[in-house]
Image (tube, rainbow, N blue to C red):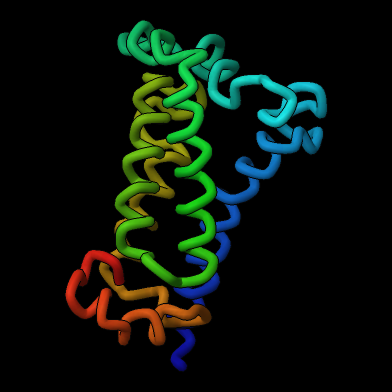
Length: 161
């Protein structure tokens, strides 16, 4: 394996952890971004804090209207879990990258214009990295993507690669 393949593999796994960690923190209330008493398991919406208090800009009203919606909570939490696991394992990386880009762009739009840099913030940078990962078949390096891509299902539906 070439050095750049290791780098892309490590980048994919690291970005996967960036998605997977908030899933666990919001689910269990590990005390980082989510206090123990505010976990999803204790009945608190994992999205309402951000949607009600973290949104700003011209689209804030739209995102605030989504707060306390169980469907939004489930979609968000499943998105974090599946995107994170997919990137870490190297399975279904392409669809995980597209899903991750969508989630990140929505979060960027919810905070228009970001405080620290009004044009480019981490949501945009991570989206660009995900785009690169989706086009490189990065799941094959340091992951199960090579084995996954040989299955009949993936051969038939390349988007699952």
